[in-house]
Amino acid sequence: MRIATLGFHHETNTFQSVKTDYDSFANFEFLRGSEIADRHATSKFTLAGYFQSAQMFEFDLVPLLFAFTGPTGTITKDTFDRISEEMIDKLKQNGPWDGVLLAQHGAAVTEEYPDMDGEISRRVREVVGPDTPVVMTLDLHCNITQDQVANTDAIVVFRTNPHLDAVERAVEASEILVKTIRGEVRPVQHLVQVPMMINIVKQPTGFGPMKEIMDEVHQVLEKPGVLSASCGQGFPYADVDQMGVSFLVVTDGDAVKAEKQAKLLARKAWDLRAELQNDSPSIEESISRAMNASSDGKPTAIMDVGDNVGGGGTADSTHLLAEATSQGLSGDKSLLLTLFDPTNVQVCISAGVGSTITLKVGAGTDRLHGEPIEVTANIRAITDGKFEEPKPTHGGLRFFDYGPSVALDTEAGHTIVLHTVRGIGNMSREQYYSIGIRPEEYRVIICKGTVSPRAAYEPISREIIMANSPGVTSANMSSFSYENRRTPLYPFELDTTFD
Ligand SMILES: [Zn+2]
Image (tube, rainbow, N blue to C red):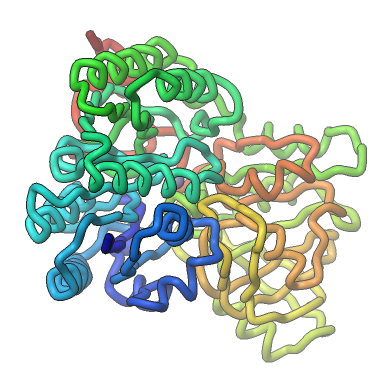
């Protein structure tokens, strides 16, 4: 049994001013053939699950191409053409195939295609024909579409946020594919798109209304004949018609059951719609809550929701640092944060470890993310910004590269790590350990993310506060001008109805 695997993985924040070009993928992760196993066979990402499945279910997995970069702006037409053509050529040239396993994200937007994942699945189907099963995995932040459903035999979506189940979902997808090839099951999928969005601060699956929804998804999974059940939370920063919440149920040959169960889940989410919206505290309130927290030796972690690097944030917002400074947060190890600041990293490398230096840090991208802040600091350490995280973190990545990085201890008692690659937010504590910092020892930690840092910071924090900070990933949805989203859509149109 020969099965191809390939992926073109991107979460597109269409509100970002900088477009995503070919080099964004080439410089981040662009893997061909055996490079895919080298990078991912031991990761906790989807592809690792495909490699494990090849052994469990005894098939030959042929990795063809995997292109991935952090969440950035709309993918240019030229980039899409070059990457998709290489993918499709490899699929054509190395066939015939018994099946295809796709590793997509589900919220990719190109200049030409608002539903890039639908277009990729269409092109894959065109090559392999209607009789070769195609199964696709998606990130929970996907905007699932009818095109994606029409061009695949089954779609399986992550069920945890932070995403800790990529490997399990890949195994689930592989099992459906193998059983389909053997003729043991005949997957039928039904998609219901609900006219609502879930605010980013309500997307964690471990508590609150989102947990209630996922509990219901798990109940559907227990029903006989159900092969898979998924919620697509939607990626709110993609200004496309497809943006929003959806539910997909895959059954073994029973279209009526798939439709009924998907509708049941959609109704559950719709009934909870008011609880799934933004109620996060202002930056003033967030800092003051953290400063007034009892000192039980554990840090308070503040999520910088407006600068959620995992959602397209610039990684250099200074709004929370400015607020902490203005409220007088100071003292040894009082505050810890990272900022993307390549210019100042070069200045610090020239000055050398141990020097004291005065710099204006952060906010180098635009004024939406604050003003550069003047600090006088001692240069504690300089590293290459590369580290490995063997434990599962959000998305299951193992190898991280933030580029040359510098740790600064400021006169106010803050520690700021400046880095040179925007990276993917503060997803691993190894980011600090690798530069000689123990985040456990700090009073307040600012994390550039909304949900993704939780897996790393929940275990060491007394509390997690999701701050309603300004920025390109703000939870305040009225700060964005949508032109292409569908209408009506709750909560933008509060009188939206759903039958
Ligand atoms: Zn995600």
